[in-house]
Length: 107
Image: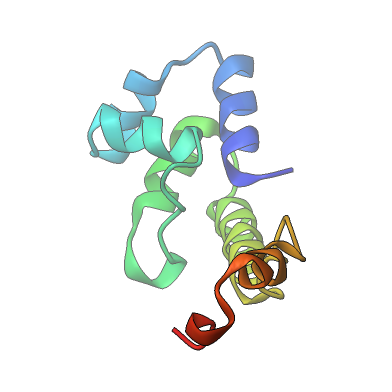
């Protein structure tokens, strides 16, 4: 389960909203919204005390939030380091070069 899905699940179980989480963590509602919609990745555990504050409201161990955030961060890194995307139209460049005037193909 992803960090954001877990937090959303706990908020629903405890009948809290994003505003409650923002107040507990002492951050803006916009920041919480971005975390929960995965537009912003969770902060590194050693750079902030946000996990302790969030964990208190969500009634979980801070280490659980940190673990989920670390997994999500590792998955994001793996996606970025994966093979570059392959072209959608592999022969397109060759087709264009074939249409060019032979003397200008090097351009």
